[in-house]
Amino acid sequence: MKPHLKKQWSIGQITPEFLWEMETILHLYQLPYDPMYPVVCIDERPCQLIDDIIAPIPMKLNTPKRQDHHYKRNGVASLFIAFEPLTGQRIVEVRYRRTKVDYAHFLNKVAQHYPNATQIRLVQDNLNTHTPSAFYQTFDASKAFELTRLLDMCYTPKSASWLNTVEIELSVLSRQCLSRRIGQVSELQRQVNAWAEARNRKKVRVNWQFTLNHARHKFKRFYHNSHA
Image (cartoon, rainbow, N blue to C red; front, side, top):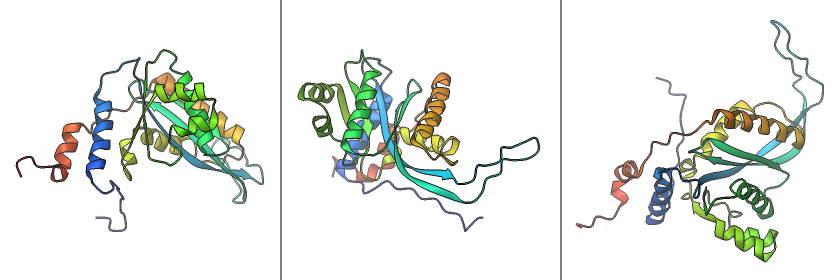
């Protein structure tokens, strides 16, 4: 036993709205791959820009890299990521801010990766910037309307970001790329690009196991009983 350890897991308040949003996403995950209707999961996270004051000493044979404990903060950048779980492809972009305009520009970039798609099924959380109105704040009316027609927005329930497969990718990215000091936006973009390109070449997918049937069994006491 390890009583000093604990794990946290948040699924939010289970309401009919929660069930509806959860089932919408789980249904998307169970659909067969269709390049005309790709399922793409997106999210973003802040990244502290932390630079060395004294240049680190590179590692040598039998000697690890040595880094001074002093550092300087260069502000915060925002990392946007889109992930297609059935193809193992991801798109990353670093921006200086996390506004509706930044969100709109990133989704426009995502849309450009699917020039032949009839509609992109977009899984995202309920952040207040995640709204089609962002397109009208950023682009002309024709472009904004085009994006609202192309992007079918599906939202995870509140406090249920675990339903978004891109969270798995963000966790991997944080461990493999973001755990070291990166002081400039340009360097952060270079490193996350290299990470994404490597995983895209390997076509690293997510094998999602939590299905509609699992959900209905897990949360069965929250569903309406037609025999009541």
